[in-house]
Image (tube, rainbow, N blue to C red; front, side):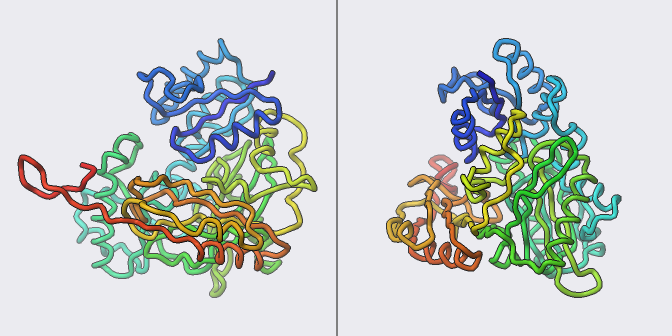
Amino acid sequence: MSRLLILASKLGYQTRSFAEAAKALGVDVVFASDRCHQLEDPWADGAIAVHFDQPEDAARLIVKQSLVRPVDGLIALGDRATSTAAHTARALGFAYNSPQAVENCRSKLRQREVLRDAGLPVPGFFSFKLDKRLEKILPRVEFPCVIKPLRLAAGQGVIRTNNPEEFQAAVARIKQLLETPEIKVTREPDLDRVLVERYIPGGEVAVEGLITRGKFRVLGVFDKPDPLEGPYFEETLYVTPSRLPDEMYDRLLDCAERTVHALGLTHGPVHAEFRIKNDGPDKGPWVLEAAPRPIGGLCARALRFGPKRVLLEELLVRHAMGMTGTDIDREEDASGVMMIPVPKSGTLEKVEGEERARATSGIEDLQITARLHDFLAAWPEGSTYLGFIFAHAKSPAEVESALRLAHGHLKFEIAERLPVQHPVTGTAQSASE
């Protein structure tokens, strides 16, 4: 039996879906995960415990383990695992992106520099350390602007500001986020630095692609019908096929291919996001970011291929294992997903309306992934969703309507996290401290 190495966070949504796709193809699975190495296989899945913040050391450990359990291909889920995947693939002789190409994507600052130097349309930008005095930074800022950490994903910590007062408040908020234990424990580099870039008006689209030994092809293009204008940038609706005009669509695909090649990506899945500016001399697609990994969360389920409606997970497993059946096109019907946003920070106490949401015409599935009684953080501090709604119909408009109607049936009761008094100091603190 052939064996696939899946590198993924212990908290990732996608791991089970890709493992199930592999097993359905008769492929065994080995996991490499950022879990505690001192626990004796807590999930009973035989995973290799690694530190994704030390990719070369993690790769050496995986290669050593592969002497006992050889693997025939690999796939990385989520941004943090991609560097380890690159070093592992190079050591094992697998086709994959180089470590340098992955690093070009992992740092938002480095990615901006590479794309700018290649002549790609990216907003004006600069970076600074959070210990700098803001009165020295503000003269460089062109409002409106977007401030973001260099390494976080899913819109976490990304804030639009329109004036100096908002800028100072946003910097303070991002600094506080980057100093939380949840972020510090990742040991990501550049947690003391942020990126400032000019805000580009327009709608957003996402391109899902696949590179095979340097040849890039588009698997699907998603419109994001909800306006993402700030101040925060939590994503909600993804609908495909895109409703962009043909001329703009062609320009987008050209921009996506140029982006992939400029970053040095050569093999594997790619998820890229763009702003579409509809007027002015700089009209057209602008690169927001590209990552050498599949679309996040459970959203891969919104893409299916060929008359048998093969799921994206299966297609990507086939590609990673060098199997046939990866050259099929996306189905003709429209599909989409809603990532159910967290409306406010607090503890999830109750979910109502699931049956009515599932019964909505066009809805194929509803997954509530948030657990009752868990604390949920809204954006910009948060990065996880309440769940996912999936729809399928003849047209993108029908898909969008179904997702909105289903979401309207759902009611989430989220209680505020009450402060408690410290037994010694008498000061107020959150219940989780």
